[in-house]
Length: 342
Image 1 (cartoon, one colour):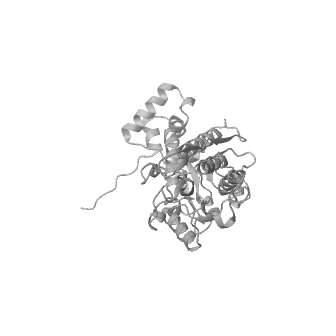
Image 2 (image 1 turned 120 degrees about the vertical axis):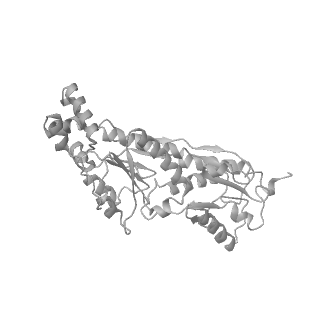
Image 3 (image 1 turned 45 degrees about the horizontal axis):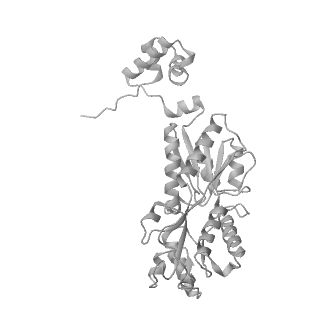
């Protein structure tokens, strides 16, 4: 016996059963205030009885809303999700979006092209992460008339933004090490994404400026050879330590743990380690990591709140929110070996 697929209940079926027009049924679902309350209630009850569900595409066109927020990432998702930071950031984004009834659409370069990916994305607004003001995708989003907020990016004209006090956090980290007597320092910097801003407002530039200014105030120069650039992954940290050791670097303060232990060094007796971000793993490393805490989830939450305000027509296009960074001292830092016993 051949299996028959049940016919989908249509808006016309509901209209006929309720004795109203298809327009009235549409109003009941999309704009019930335009109907008498009894009529709207009766239509909804009949629709429920018949098992009618509005076509999502038709409803989207009627309301001019998709119910979806785009998260524009400068790298492929396989790279982005390997970064623990992005998982925490996404949790913040998702929490606020879901509470407001919105889904998420992650937009990453399609065959190497963010522009191509954006053209295929059907969203109500975009949270853009780490893009330069002159990046072509920014112009494309504006041409599409999409509301947008940015995170860890340049400050764009008439675009709300969220970042953290990266420079202040870096200063706090450097001053902590200086106070412990460290003078030989290696900085492991985050590798810039292909589409990241290259100007002074870049996260990497702000942090390096903070490190350098604090050490310079103490009479210590951080040269180009004292900065190793790596990907923001565990493998990237290991690679940075390997390259530093091949270059003959033997600092007393650095930004990675496992690679040091693989070389027989003890933390913090031989080398002190300071991180930036305070991802959840920082508390469970051996030893627990001294780090600059930034509200990663809070970044995502604030970015979505700003975007929802724009979508609703109540946002302030020039609003910029800078979140605080705070030094969290744990067991991975101690007095420099050369300053002990003095």
